Image (tube, rainbow, N blue to C red; front, top):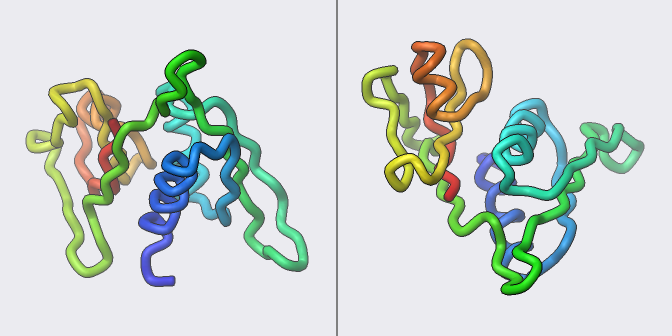
Length: 134
């Protein structure tokens, strides 16, 4: 697999389109940090990190997706991969993008860890723009 973050986002996107309640994704440090951000910002209902086993040495992440109770619309409307292995996208602290004028979030990998666009502006750091979520 050449782009594990794109695979992570695609699995989430496919589970949302299929109206699944839970999706299981192979784990890594970066994926765990993205999952924590999604939970903190209210885009997913819950998550669980499972330890490694013989079949899956890195472990897995089980994510419970969040839907509106009446309309059954997902909390995540759009997932967009920005920086790709063939073309990395970096943003200086002055040029960090705003997603839907502040209604969505951009997840950025900085020297101080993985964080949202607002947190990066507050910490005064730039970095690689991983994805947009709205």
